[in-house]
Structure formats: C-alpha cells, structure tokens
Amino acid sequence: MTVENRLPHLTKEIDLRTAENAKLLTASLPLELLHRLEVTLQNFNDELSTWNHDLTEYAKALDEQLAHLDQLSKVWQSTLQSPELSQAAPEILKRVQSLIDSIGRTRQALESRRATALTLEGRVLESTAQVQTASSAVEQAEARAVKNLLVQDSPPIWGLEISNWREESRASFFWQASLSVLSAYIKARPTIFLLHAIIILILVVVVHWLRRGVHKWTEEEPSLRRAAPVFDLPFSTATALSFVIIAPVYSLAPGLLQAILGAAVLIPTALQPQTKSIRRAK
Image 1 (cartoon, one colour):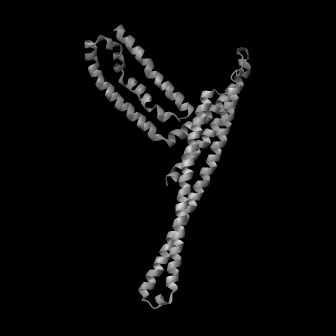
Image 2 (cartoon, rainbow, N blue to C red):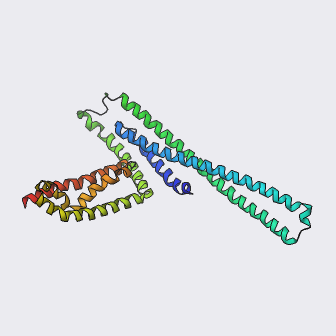
Image 3 (cartoon, rainbow, N blue to C red):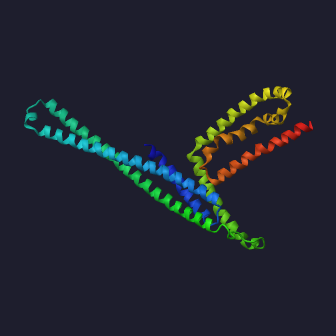
C-alpha cells in the first residue's frame, strides 16, 4: 500500500515543519515567508485529504468483500449440513469443508487489511489535525502582519546591543529546526537531487557542443560576441540553467534549502563577468 510506505516519511516531515514553524512564528515574519509556509501546509493538507479519501474507499471495498464472504460461508455451511450432502461421497464433503476453510482464511486476511487501513486512516486524521492547527497559527500571524504593516517591528539602531543576545538565542533554535527539516526533506526525496544532477549533466553536454559553433557564429556575426563568454564555462552555465528548469520542483523545499540553492545560482552567475574580463585582458 502506497500510503503505508509514504505516511511515516510524511508524518516525520510534518512534525519537523510544524516545529520549525512554531519557532519561526515567535518572530515577526514578512508576509512573503508566511505565505510560503501557508502554501507548504496546504500541500500537506491536500495530500493527507487524498490519502484519507483513498483509505476510506479501500475500507468500504474491504467491508463489501467481507460481507460477500460471510454470505458464501453461510451458504456452504448450510450446504454442508443438508441431509442430501450427508449421503454424498466423502470426497465431496472434504471439498466443501476445504472451501469453507479457504473462505475463513481469506476473511482473516481481509480483516487484517481492514484493521491496517483503519489504523492508517487514524494516523492520517491525526496528521491532518496537526497541519490544520499549524495552518491556523500561520493565518493568525498573517493577520497580525497585515494589521502591523505600519508598526515598528524591529529595534532602533541604538538598541541593537541590548537585543543581540535574544536574537542569537532565537537564531540557534531556528538553525536546529531548519537543519532537521532539511535532513528529513533530503531523506524523503533523494530522487529530486538525482534528477537535478542528470539535468546538469545533459546541459553541460549541450553547452559544450554549442560552444564549438559559437566562435564560428561570432566571426560571421560580431553582435554575438557579448554572449559568447557564457559558453566558455559549460558547467557554470548548465548549473544556472538547471535551476530555471527544475525550480518548480523545489517550490515546497525548506527555507534553508531554498537559501542554499539561491546562493548556488549566484556562483555561476558571478563567474560569467569574471571570465568575460579575463578574455578582454588577454
């Protein structure tokens, strides 16, 4: 069952995200960050809602199968106890009894599946309640942020020394929570990073291949010389382009990972002007 395999990872991520959110909400956050938290929680809620629906339908289907087996069992029990069958050959009696036993074993297996489905449904509902509570806290924070748009939300410059120790203490909590969420995200979605690496590799090959023809094109069309340095760093260019392609996949990534990826994009972007100046110096 897909839910049974994925639910532990999702519940762990929800626990870490809600813990991170609780610590983040102790500070005054910008509306943009609050909206991102709200979107992440809404996606959790949508996924849990889908799982709850699937588990409910699965439990109903199992109930129908159990009812059908009960009917079959009654029919064959009545058949086994009928006077006509008592005069039949022993082999027939054995086959009927074997069929009744098989129905009983099948019923036990279905009851076990149904119990598992109900347990999973209960865990899904618990996680849903947790997400809804976190969403309510974010909504309240958004309402306060809108209400206090014109209210001073940070200390004046001359009061920074007084509040430094508070900020440092709070930052340590933020880092601990953010690192925990990042670790859970990486463990739950390793294929995302593999896909990203494959995209970068493909783009490196493409940029390297295009590089061969760029110099010929610049000789024929001098206006293209300004774009030529981009192809002199295939890996940097491919890395920058890969983030444009795969950006939607990271839309629900933790804030720390998005900050790391944002910094990673700046590195190849910053290298382009340096390469261009080196070429001019030569």
